[in-house]
Length: 184
Image 1 (tube, one colour):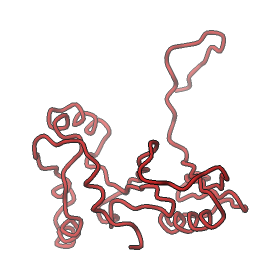
Image 2 (cartoon, helix red, strand yellow; image 1 turned 45 degrees about the vertical axis):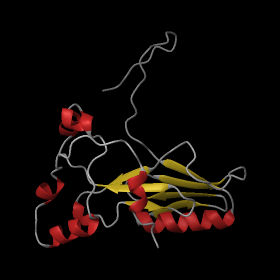
Image 3 (cartoon, helix red, strand yellow; image 1 turned 180 degrees about the vertical axis):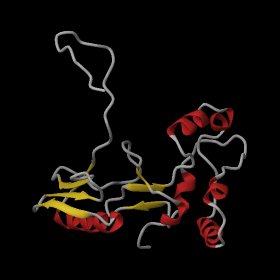
């Protein structure tokens, strides 16, 4: 459905985007730039669709680029956990495709890989409106090695993805620190 805009009359409703096109990552210098491009090409099995000495476009699907990496001289190295973007998440088709859940690129950006636990957006939205989600929007901890073992033993993804109800859970990011950094 095409939206018609009346440019002479400001409205109160914004137009939703069709999809998230790409992310742009800033890096400080040539050494970091080359390390970041190498990391992201390998992490996403991406194709370099454009690159010069200060900018690289990477794609892993039909889009001309999903990740752009550029040298911005005013960029400073990340120290601690500054405000801003917490992480970027990539969805995979099945649990079989996942290995580790959180990674960090050479500049310290957090990357999440995930599988949706619901077959449709409507199911997920209904769960978000539930008492169960309200008391625990974070989720449950699990052992990735146990998950792999269950998959290898032939347990169904439907069974594995069923979220156990554990009651109320405080919102905290400390549990993310247990996940490995790629290459370590």
